[in-house]
Amino acid sequence: MNRIAEVIDNCKNQEQAKMLQAACRAALVGGSIIREKYDAPRSITMKGEINLVTDTDVASEAAIVASITEDTPEIAIMAEESTGTHPQATAGDVWIIDPLDGTTNFAHGFPFFAVSIALLRDGVPLVGVVYCPMQDELFTACHDCGAWLNGGPIKVTDTRFLVESLVATGFPYDIHKNLDEILMQLRDILPKVRDIRRAGAASIDLAYVACGRLDGFWEMDLQPWDTAAGWLLVNEAGGTVTDFIGKNYSPFIPEILAANPTIHSLLLKQLE
Ligand code: IPD
Ligand code: CA
Ligand code: CA
Image (cartoon, rainbow, N blue to C red; front, side, top):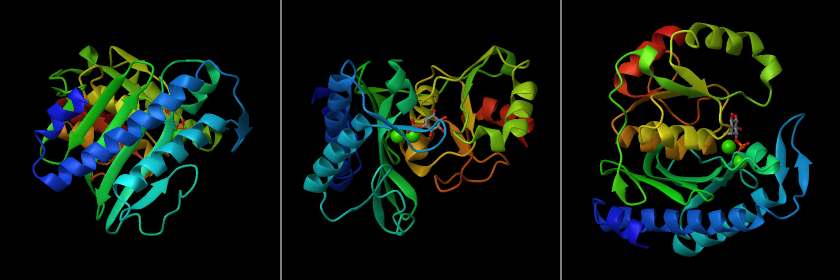
């Protein structure tokens, strides 16, 4: 628990520390299930034409929900595989949980996936955790207290020019509906940046912006559990997070642009 203790010391108050500890414990529990099942045979079912769910998504979610409920029984839960449409998601306290972000990667044995857990209070993120089990990397953030990777502080890059930037994006499961728009974004941005990554887990893309491995990230058609934790990570690491026209971000809107402040304004011009 050393990497958690370091971050908890920096929390503003006991309540925040308790919530961060609960989120970390649950993320590590879910992550250890995912890691154990990585080499086991997978049971895969289809949620849509290319949208998968595995038994590991479900097992991770059950363990995370049990852990969070034990630590904070009073707080509502919105979790992708079970209670994805919690009606009070924007009011009061609610945990927003993606038990396995990057399911397609997991199913194909591509080791880039995470558990993502955030606590929102009236729509504002108080705590955010993204845990990458194969890399054993724990990204944590607390409102007004900074962002951390395995207990060490992180911040966004200071890259100032698109041509020097490494950025990331993702493609929605119903890509055929927005194919033209997505290709237009790529056509505009790809020739201007150093390169683009599409690694397949939005929560990690955001965590990587927060810790400076990426300069920016944009994607459309995401769900609250994909972005809620990463949103706080980027904010607390000094980055800027908005929609595609520069308005304040909320995980209940489908599009996100997150980057260091300079790259954010340059990418915004391309997306607007
Ligand atoms: C997906 C991943 C992916 C993004 C998709 C998400 P899932 O989440 O974050 O990177 O492009 O839009 O739905 O389904 O693996 O939890
Ligand atoms: Ca997801
Ligand atoms: Ca998921």
